[in-house]
Every structure is written in structure tokens, then in C-alpha cells.
Amino acid sequence: MTNSLKNIISLIIVFSTSAFAQTEFNDTTKVVDGMKIYIPGEGKVTVNYGKKIGDDPLFQDSSRIETKVKYFFLDKKTSSAFKVKTIKAPKIRMVEPLEKIRKRYVAFGINDFKTTPMAELRYSTLRNRKYNAGFDMKHFSQKQNVGSSIDALYGNSTVSIYGKRFLRGKALYGSADYENNVFNFHGFDKDQFISFNPKDFKRAVGKYTVEAGLKSTSKDQSRLGYDVGVNYNQLSLDEMATVEHKSDFDLNMNKYLVWTKYDWFKGIFNLDYNASYLNSGRPNKDHESFYFSVFPSFDLQFKEIDFTVGVKAFYQTNNKDFNGMPYLEGDWSFVKDVLHIFGRLQNDYKRLSYLDYVYENPFIANYQDILNINVPVDFMGGIKGAFSSNSSFSLGFRYRNYKSMPIYYNLSNNPTLEFNVVEDEVVNRQGFLEFLHEGKKLNILTKIEYNLYDVFNLEAYHLPAFYGETRLAYKLQDKFVLGTDLFFYGEQLGIESFNDNGRPNTITINPIFDFNIDFRYNYSQKLGVFIKTNNILNTKHQRWDQYANYGFNMLVGIDYNF
Picture 1 (tube, rainbow, N blue to C red):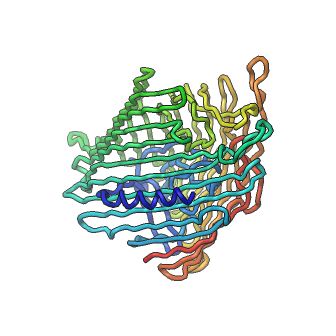
Picture 2: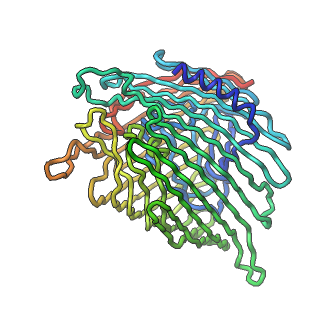
Picture 3: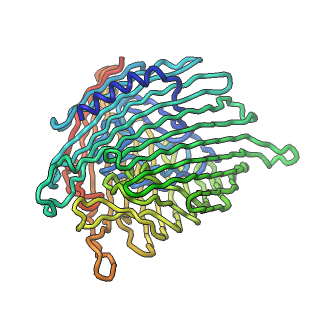
């Protein structure tokens, strides 16, 4: 871990000489006394009928590799990526340390005295009319006895440079990142080994990312808006046993249109296009393909109704799989700014790779096939509303018919208990409820999801039917902030073995309840201390079969802006 940190330091010196741009994020950060509020999307806090319904919920788990280290423990969760547009109150991520825009930032923390302490260094130039640039360096690692044959290990080291050059009516942006993750297969079956060395079960994941692009910055809706970017990712796994190269070209164009002949015909035309190349080399297996997606749409905006019509089409060269279907989305302001009825019908298709696998399930074997997610029918509908300007809710139903969906499983007769991934036909019916409150002192986010899975060949392995989370942040005084997270996963199914007829013998994995508390004290506008606790009840649970999550753990640290 120490050697990884030294390599990171040397890399930042090389990267710093070539920095010229900063990734242009669509997210917004608001700073409120004592806490930072992160608003995915454009950050608009009023009703925006043109906003699209977001992707499906993601089950974030305790062994997931975090791509952004902000004092998170190994089993720190992140809020769902599911974004039904709320009314008045914005989407937020809470329980983050105070973070104002400053040129320099440094943080240091200690958790277990077994691994390298947490450290973060950040430098950024102040924004001006010509450019903005900076770099980040972060490290976090953790090691704990979770009752397995060896201690569970996790480490993350990241270095990134970014910048943005402002031109007349447009901005040139770019970034370069390197991320190194280390963990181990601590759930292996030691009884199947005569002798073993713990180092043999360590896994290292390295990822390089380079991005550059050009986007318009004009606020004039009558002018054509655009964002053109290229992105390159390289992933190496298990000492180069698996190596992937992925290149993407992304284009977004949008323009506000008005048909003068008809006053009612006005709205936003939007075009999203992606071309992607993937070269994935694994032991005794290779994959090479191009992937294309195009999504033209027109958002027709009436006084009380927002209706979007379009077409989503996908094509992949290696399997010559073409998917296309009309896109329909509607939002009816039944009671303006108080109650809306929404619905959406679409298809979806995604080519997966180890860039997806290892960040979903880090214990996956390195010789798996490259699969796809194919959803010919995806329907969502429900209601959303606001109790006040600070509180909102959404309640709905979703139906998805997967032609192919990845399912993870492992077998007890595999000594290392690595996971396999296979695809199956799945019908998913989901009900969801979300409540959000944003106040001067109190912020609350609550989500509940209930899923039914009809799987054609196998079972819904590692897909809990019930999931719930509550996030709360409370400002005690001007200098004190208290936060808490509560998560609950329902029972899950796993595979113990296959019988003589090839049918799986299933096992039940116990539910997960996780309770975390965070505390922060701001001594001054520049200096602060924090305490992060995870799994404060020290419950024993598993997100992935045979791989125990961390028990109670704590991080104590100090940060300084200068």
C-alpha cells in the first residue's frame, strides 16, 4: 500500500506538466453552513418539465470499489442513481464534510493502525474568465478481521488532474485520472488448501482514464447547444491477467424550437449519440466490438403537460444485435407545483465489460464472458409531489422485461469462491417510494424499494426483494453537524452447489441492517475535525455470499483549507 502511494506521488508530477482542462460536470454543489449538499443533474430547485426520469436504482454494497474516496469506509453506501425529478426540493447527497471552494485543501485520518493512514491533498486555481485547473490526490485503506481465514483488505489510491479553458461562447475541458484499488478474496475455503500464502489471494485493480471535450456555454436557448467529448479507459486486473481498453465518443446537441404558425408547438430538440470501442483480453478469451447508440427526442412543453417523444436505437458489431424502439415520456401537472403524474416507456441496451463487472462485484473471476443488458420493454409510472417548498415525495411502479440480465453466483466447490456471471431472461416488477426534506437545520432522504423477479432459468441470486435507506443530517449549532445513515437489504439467494441433474441447490443469505453515524466539528472556517463510524451495531452480514462485510469501524481525522 505504501508503494502504491509513492507511485501516485510520482505520477502527479508527470500529469501536472500536461494539465490543461477540467471535466465539465453537470452536477451542482451547494454549500450550506456546516454541510455540503450535492445535487445530481443541473441543480435546479424548481419544477423543470424538460428533465428526464433517471436510471434504475443501484444496489450499492459493502464491497463495491468506490471511484471517489471521501473518507468512505469499505461498506459505506452511496445514494441511488434513480432520479425521478422532484418538485421544489432537489435531490441531495447528505452527510458530507464542509467543503468550500478554496485553492488548497489537505486532510488526514486514522482508522485501524494496520494500514496506511487516510490522506487527501487538493489544489485548484481560483476560477477566472480564462481558465481553471487543479489536481487531487487521495488514499484510503482498511484491514479488519471479519471471521474469515484471512483479514479483509481494502485500499484505494487516486490521482487526478483537470482543467478548463474558457473561450468565447464555449469551453474546452479535460482530465486525466489514475486509480488503484487493492482488496482480497478473504472468503476463500482454507480447507481446500494444504497450505496458502495470504498474498496469493490479493487482487489489484488499476484504471487509467483520459477525457477531453468541447461544450457550448451560451445561455441563449435559441442557439444550438452542444457537448462533444472523447474518453479513454484502461483497466488491468490481477497483474495484467485481464486488460481492457475502451474508447468512447459522445455527442449531445440541443436546441429550443418554436413553430411560429402554432403557438402551442414549442420545446427542446435533443440528440444523444455514443460510439464505443472495446478490446477485452482475459485468460484464453478475447473480445472486440464496436457499440453505437443514438437517441433523438423532442420535448414538447405545454402549460400543464410536458410530453417527450423520440427513438432509442442500439447496435453492437460482434453479435450484430440491433435494438430500436420509440421513446415516450409524459409529466402532467395535476395540481401545479403540488402533484404530478408521470410515466415513461422505453427500451435499453448496454454492453458490459470488466469496467462494469469489477465495480459491481469485486470478487468476480477474471475469465468471464462479455455480456449485455438488453431490456426491450421498460415502463415506469407514478405520482410525485411536494408537501412544501422544502419537502417532496415520489411514489411509483416499474416493469422491466429483460431479454438478458447479468446474474452473479459462486460455488462452494470453488476453492477461491470467485464469482461467475451469467445472463438470463428476467421480468422485474418494482414498487418504490421516496421522501426528501431539505431544511436549514435538518435534511432527510428516505427510499424504499420492493422488487419481484421472475427468472427464466436460474433464480434471483444476490438480488434482494426489499431495500430501504434513510439519510439524515442535522446541524446542531453553527460549528456542529451530525449525520446518520440506515440501510436495510432483505434476504438474498445464493447457490451452494448443483445437483446431479444440473439444477442449483440454493441457500438463503440473511438480511443486512447497517447503521452509521458521522460527526463533524468546524473549529473555524478553515480547520475542522470529523469522526466517521460504520456498522455501529457491529452486525454480521454478507452482501456477496461467503464474503463478510466489515464490523464496527471508525475513522478520526482533521482537515484544513488554506
